Amino acid sequence: SKEASEDVPKGRVIGQDPDPMSTLPPGDGVDLTVSTGQPDVVVPDILGDDKDTARQKLTDAGLRVKLVERQSDEDQGTVVDSDPRPATSVSKGSLVTVFYSAGPKQVPSVVGLKEGAARAKLQKAGFTVETVTDSQTQSQKGTVLKQSPSAFTTARQGTTVFITVSSYEPPSETPTPTPTPSPTPTETTPPTESPSVPPPA
Image (cartoon, rainbow, N blue to C red; front, top):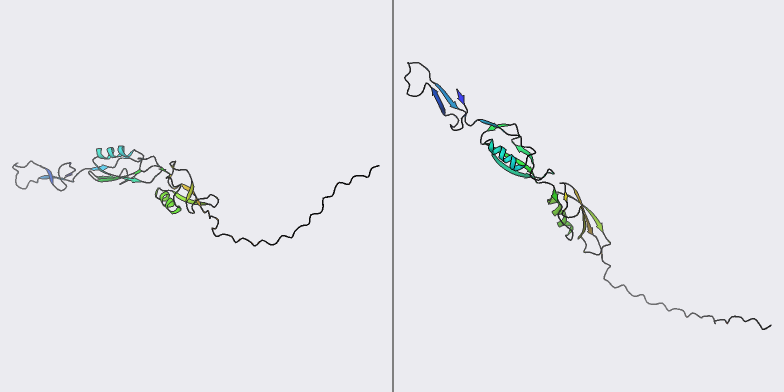
């Protein structure tokens, strides 16, 4: 017969019937009980649990745990998946990888950075980026002037952050040639007429 055992490795004999050292009539059989190894464990349902609660549940079930952070909009630390999935039968001592949410992200501050650096910083944080240009504000071309949503607000992964980038062109430095003044014709001003006084009556 076969039986799971916490202590006896798979394939080893756990017990026999009759006991060792017993005298048997010739030809009588001996029943051996062979270990099938550690009993199987069902992975508990940990989805939606906090990662520390999930770790405890799995450890209590005799499983090993590896925690892996994953980008997700669930609250930070919430279990979003596991491998193997809950309700799967596995050998005791198996490794279960628990994926937990990194949580919504804070929008990093990118005002004052160059457009390329700002774009890279926002994308690395899990956001998409749209650029709007501003040619009026006097600032170095290519510098981020504003962002929306503003820095340090929490936003879902994949949110579009709009950055306003300066496209200001300073007026050209080259002096404009002074036009040669054309001679102004001297204007003859008509003599000021004295108001006509009516002749005395």
